[in-house]
Image (tube, rainbow, N blue to C red; front, side, top):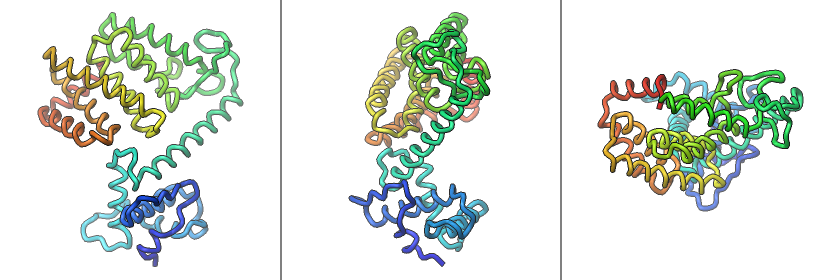
Length: 317
C-alpha cells in the first residue's frame, strides 16, 4: 500500500519541471499528487508495467473517483486526490505553484502533438493552390478544420479577407452572429477552425471590428471576449502584453456602455462574461473581476440568462 509520503515524494514523470524552489511542503506535496494523477490518467501502459512509481495505484484512484459518493469515503488517497483535482479545475492563476507547471507541460505536449499530426497530414495531402484565391503565393497554406484529402487548404490572409467581406454584408443586414461565424467557421466543411488557425482568426476579428465597427460596443466587446478566452487557455508569457492591452480596452468599452445607459440585459450578460474572462486572465485583479461578474449575474434570473443566451446563439450578437 502506498503511503501519502511516498506518493508525494517520488520523482516527477519526465517532462514536468519539479520547480520546488520557493514552494512550501504542502504545496510541493499537492503538486506531486497532481503530477501523479495527471500521468496516470494518460498512461498507455498496462497496469503494473509502467516505470513511473505508483502509477498503478493512482490508476485505481481514478477508477474509484469515477463512482465515489464522496461522503465519509475511506478509499486510500481518495479525499486528497479529489481536493487537488478540484483545485486544478477551479484555479485560474497562471503562476500557481501547484497546478501551473502541470498545465504548462500539458499545453506544450498538446501543441507538439497537434503540430506533428498536422504536419504529417499536410505533407501527405500537400496541395499547391489556395482554395479561395486559387494561387500559390509565398504565404503557407493552412487547414485545421474537418476538411479531408486535398480540400480546404487556404492562405490565412484569404480566410481573413473573405471573413471581413462576409461580415460587412452581415452587418448591413443586422445579422451580427454571422460576423463571428465568418471568422471561426470553415466555408468548405462548415466546422469550426481549431488551434492556432482559430487563434489567429479570432485576433484578426478583433482587429477588423476595432477598425470598422468600434462604436458597436456589443460586437466589439464580444470579439475581445472571444480572443481573451484563447489567451487564457494559452497561459503563455508571450501573450501577456496582448492580454493586458485587451483587458484595458474591454474596461474602456464597459465604461462607455455605462455612460451611454445602453444597459440592456443582453449587454449586462456580455459585460459579466467580460469581467469573468478578465478575472481568469489577471492574477492581480482576479478576485475583483470575478466579484463584479457575480454581482451582475445575480441581477439576472435564470430564465433571462437562458433567453439571452438563446437569442445570442441563434439570432446574433
